[in-house]
Length: 133
Image 1 (cartoon, rainbow, N blue to C red):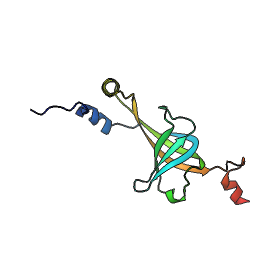
Image 2: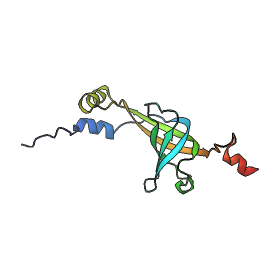
Image 3: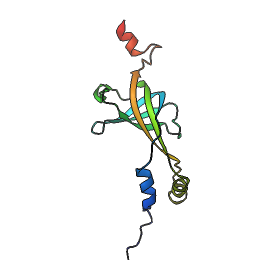
Image 4: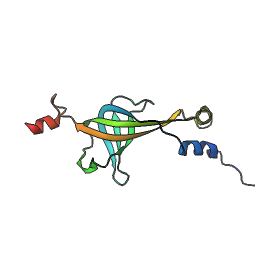
């Protein structure tokens, strides 16, 4: 008989998480800066000044194809326009995660960067406006 590991998450929990149904995305705007680039996955980690719905300030965003990661700058202030995709978890899964794993999670979130604009922090103008002059 195979002994079950204590750290193992039951199949019914992983099934629900892997097959989560995302609702229609909500478009959000927020300012912050880029922390890390993931070139192979076409993703970035972003630190936002205002928290997203679940309270996080650091999120990983998928980058749409028309934005080139090579053109982005770490540590510079941007205004990000992004879609927040949310898939609620059942009460049963949420309670299991909270009681057994001490993880408070009521939904799964995914973020997709739609556009961004670099701020010129030294002035009230955006960098794009300065380039046009």
